[in-house]
Length: 236
Image (tube, rainbow, N blue to C red; front, side):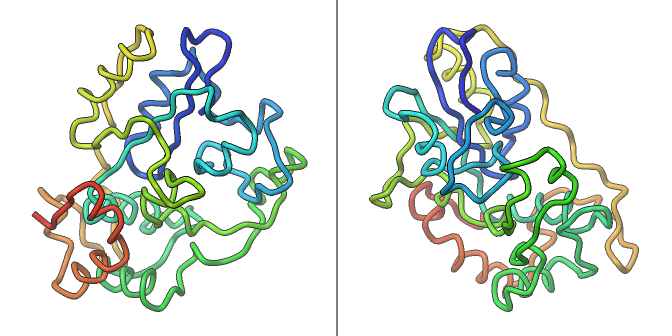
């Protein structure tokens, strides 16, 4: 999201997938453009058409990023991957659909690298919108570290403020004061429990821990080492 003329303070929101970013986009709807590509922001070096998830380096190609207050959200990777799996991987209508139990999917996604996220494709749902939407891309960033989205060219955290997902409301209140805006963060929708795995088991779980075995815990730890180191996450 890039702020528009209604915003008292110029800002850029770097939105990592499955971090509560849609609620933030909704709260800031009056002050920013969720899809910069639809407002003429484009660059030949940006191949990813879904501009609500452009990373910091890509956003820096379309605006002078130093003139904006930049922020993002981080989330415990063990929790985040369960959320991604439940919403996308288990949805037969999703491009990320895989008919596999969670621990099998973790191996497929991060060891075998054989899931849909790695496939080069054009998103036919949006290609009719024209140039920018018909570019060949993959969805690997959907299961990449939050660090991938917010690092600068030197590999350091390049945003001014990172909100911790578990403290999203408090972080958004702090952000609102900084940006001098009046807005309320809507509640994050509770994950629907009617989505089934291929064996028909419902997802009425109390904690992400119920989805993991020891092998998948280790796989996530190895693949999200930057997020874990920078933000102090643990498999609690």
